[in-house]
Amino acid sequence: MRGAPRTPTASVAVGRRIRQYRLERKLTQTELARQIGIQQSDLSRMEQGEYRVPLDVLFKILRAFEVSFGEFFGDLSQGRLTERETTLLQSFRSLSAAAQQEVLDFVEFKAAREGERDEP
Image (cartoon, rainbow, N blue to C red; front, side, top):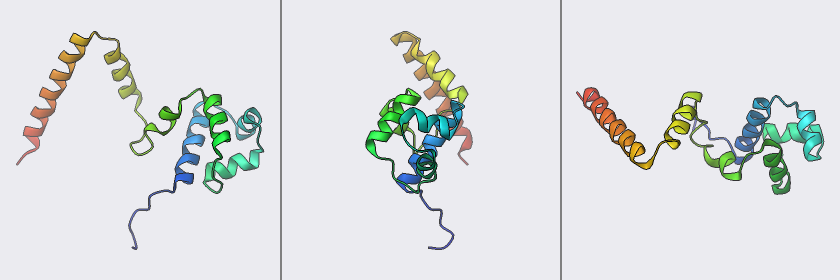
C-alpha cells in the first residue's frame, strides 16, 4: 500500500524508547553501554532497531534508567505524557478520594460542554 504510514516494528519502537530515555538522562551511548556491559556499537544498532534487544539486556537498561517494565512499555502506542500532564497527574494523586471525585466530575462536565460546542 503506497503512501500508508508504516507502524514501526517492535525493535524500532523499543530502540527509539531506549534512545529517548538515554537522552533524557544525558547519557552517551558509550556511558550506557559501559553501565550495562555491552559494546557501544551493539547499543547503537539496538537504538536503530537493527538488533533486537535481548531480555537480559533490556532488564539491565531498565535498571540503569530506574524505570519499571510497565513504565517503559506503557505508553509506546500513546506517546509520553507532556510535562503539563505529568504535573496534573501528580497533583491529582496528592488529593483525597473525595477531592479526586470532585475533579473527575468537573473534568467530565467540561468535556461534555466542549463536545456540545463542537457539534454542528
